[in-house]
Image (cartoon, rainbow, N blue to C red):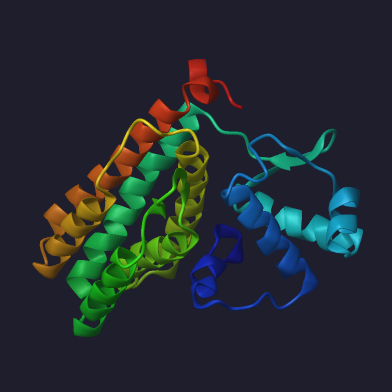
Length: 242
C-alpha cells in the first residue's frame, strides 16, 4: 500500500524517517512539493548522494519511491526528473481529487462519531489561528499554515473507513499541493477568502449535510485550480508541460 502514498497519513504526527533512504525521500518530497526542485528538473543520483552524504543505492531507492507517488519520472535513457506540470494534468488531478475526496468526506459524515466531529473543529480552529501567507510577502505561504492545512483536510476524511480511499486521496493531495505552491509565488493580483471556504465545509459537516459539504469542498478545489491557471499562464500556455 505504500506505493499509493498511505505513508502520507502516518507522517502527520511529526514521525522522523526510520532510515537514510526514508530521510532522503522526505527531503526530496519536501523540495518537490515546495517547488524548490521545479517541475522538469533533472535529478542526478551521484549529485544527490554527495549532497545528502548517503549511498547511490539509498538515493536510487528514494527516487523510485517518489516515482510510485507520481512526483518523479524515470526513464531508462534520461534518468530521473521531477514530474512536469501542465494544464491538462492540473484539471485531471483536481477533478479526480473532487471525486475521491468528495466520496471520502461523504462517508466520513455518514460514519464519523462525536470524536471525529471534535477533531474537525479542533483542526479548523488551529488552522484559523495562523495566517495564510506572510504579512509582508503574500507570495509565500506561512509554513505553519501549510502543516495545519494538510492536517485539516486529512481530518475531514479520516472517518471514511477505507485505507485505500485515504491512500489515493493522499497522493492526489500532494499533487495538488505542488501546483498550489507553484502558483502562489506568482499570484499577487488575485485574492480569495480561504478561511471562509474552509468554514463553509465545516459548517456543512456540523449539520451532517453531506451534499452541502461535498459541494463546498468541490468549490474550494476548483477555485484553487482556476487561480493556479491564472497565476501561471506561461507555464500552462497551450497545455504543454513545463
